[in-house]
Length: 403
Ligand SMILES: Cc1cc2nc3c(=O)[nH]c(=O)nc-3n(C[C@H](O)[C@H](O)[C@H](O)COP(=O)(O)OP(=O)(O)OC[C@H]3O[C@@H](n4cnc5c(N)ncnc54)[C@H](O)[C@@H]3O)c2cc1C
Image 1 (tube, protein in one colour):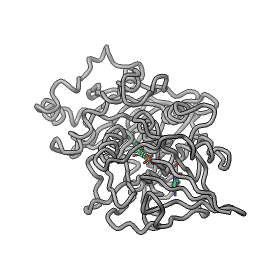
Image 2 (cartoon, rainbow, N blue to C red):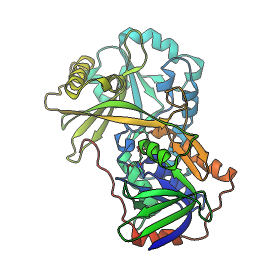
Image 3 (spheres, rainbow, N blue to C red):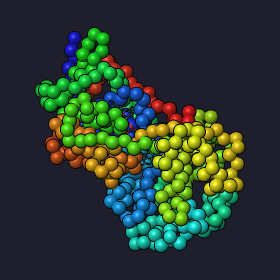
Image 4 (cartoon, rainbow, N blue to C red):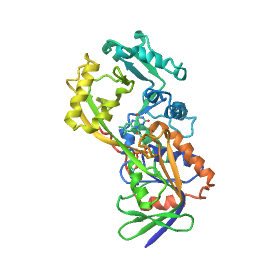
């Protein structure tokens, strides 16, 4: 038996990109539905450090680049959503820290001072007097300068839950599909491609004005399945480390460079596991350089680095672990990270990557503009979603890596 439905928008992938678009496009009057092969948030989104960057991290690489410019307006867009005045309602999402800090040891002080005094950054980054240091730095930092950045840190799991619950706490238009049980056909009444879901005794065909591929690393497989030609995917791995203990203070800081580089050696964010222990989640250069190391080598390097940076910190009760995860992005030809969120339209498919969690509002603007440009109209009813709710299960929320 074949069941046929049509709707305006079908989104693939329930990470930040797909869930944000589901909210934004619903607010724009569409009737979008989302399909997910695993758990919501379980790709890069739950692995992210949750830092909403204001661009300084990229500016540290040298000049004030395109990437730094694209990202500079993002904290404000997020703040508006968090206050309930933005394109998507994020009220109630847990903010882990209102500020992010950057600490440079003594050797870099003059280099940083010159750099931060540059016109493009003037007024956006402040060095703190020691009496204004957060408690941890008062007790653990011996030398150097602490800067307060316009960045802040959100809790990815609370963000994903909010975006799901916004569209309905009872029956969100978010459906599980099985990895090996769907394919695409070309043709159909309103589009070039249609989605076909196979189950034991029936076939469900979904036609849509637009399919939006927001499946992170999974976009590569979707591109291959549809054989679209114009867009290529790439991945760049990270070897992330975390340590957890009830004794750890909560810390949010980029520890910057050695004598030659301003790139953060270590990027620390603090989270909580299910037992309420503090989790220090470690990225930055440690994670980039660590992809060629096995787990025991990587943990050894991480332990030495933390000991060297914070000699007074007692981590003897901490439990350490690490994992490798890919960042997934568009390959725009040079194997570097694109400067902004990226999308490409081909036939009735939009393939999209936010590039950074921070840049998701920019991705949503680009998608809305593409739909307007192509005069994609909203369907008149929720019929397809109501019918699919009877046929398909809903994916659960993923767990944090440290749980
Ligand atoms: C370790 C790490 C730390 C990071 N830290 C930060 C940070 O602090 N700040 C920041 O701005 N950015 C950060 N990023 C980048 C940010 O996490 C990502 O850009 C963002 O989460 C990507 O979201 P996404 O929705 O595109 O992909 P994902 O979160 O990967 O979601 C993709 C979803 O698609 C699903 N899927 C896969 N295949 C299919 C399919 N065929 N059909 C349907 N669904 C499918 C997956 O199961 C998954 O749920 C970090 C990334 C990593 C890896």
